[in-house]
Length: 152
Image (tube, rainbow, N blue to C red):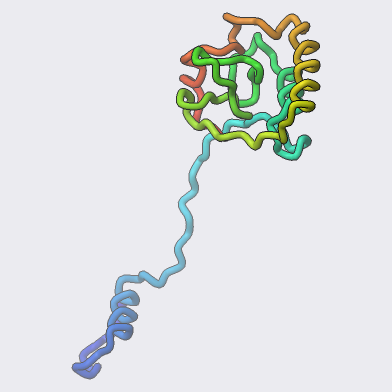
């Protein structure tokens, strides 16, 4: 209930007036957040074991966990697959300039020697039967994000 203000002086400071108005409107009542049902957030590939570096070791771990028979999502994708422009994905499976939510990956150091070692690892990875797959639910297509929420 509001206060009887008839006895107050004619000159009231702005803070006093604000206090009176807020009291009369019950603006000083404690506010409680409205309960909201939140959608489950999409998960992305966890590369924390690699210091958050999107290097060959992290990509190999994501590739080994990839199931091409399951739909491609932010956690299930082939990190060595390229889009139609020849770009490689980030750690969410998103492609630069094409996918919602592309994040520039934290890349490892590079040198001629490191690149030669990575080329040897790639020769081994390419021997895996699922390396060159296409047309499976877990493979790249322009519509892969259609049924997914926003990237993590």
